[in-house]
Length: 241
Image 1 (cartoon, rainbow, N blue to C red):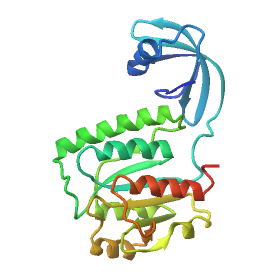
Image 2: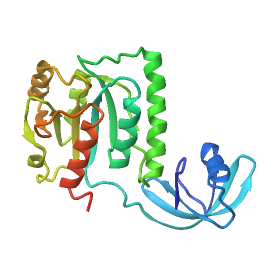
Image 3: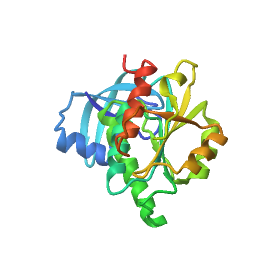
Image 4: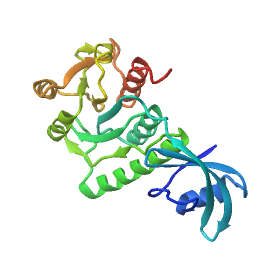
């Protein structure tokens, strides 16, 4: 069933879908009156039927609602060091599909990609649109936020609000399974860019309570590591059951 996110709270039995979603419903999906779709708003999913096609919008009728149960039991914040080219597009899309709660781009010491403020703003806006599309495709209960980019020091400070955070380091560390039986509800993952993390960054993270962790003996690419880590965590916490 087609899955969309409402702009704001749905308070009435009739809701008007506008913008790109309306065009997608009419032009791409070629939906007809009476066909069903799902709208999600504020943690609630609404079963709707297409009532009418207006100029530039689609009117739907709300038939039923229930709490949305599509979100993972653990809220994962991905602190992803900026990567080269369009790798971040891929990371954002697949991370959202896998259940990430929030994505924070991080500028670390070995980042090759260092866009200026204007270019970075455009990238973040694009990543947020990618997150929206991925959330719709995977039938998420929320659209994960792609936050403004932070320095490594700012990211470490941000992670202090989470129950547990790890930094994946090719030099070794704790096994991920050691963290998943403690009842943590919020989890932070620091993933490096193509060159990984500098040892001084790992030590700085350790000093602020972010534990070095490992994903095994093989070295994963920057675009593979976050997806492998997220998949492993979702599996270990029962979110793939």
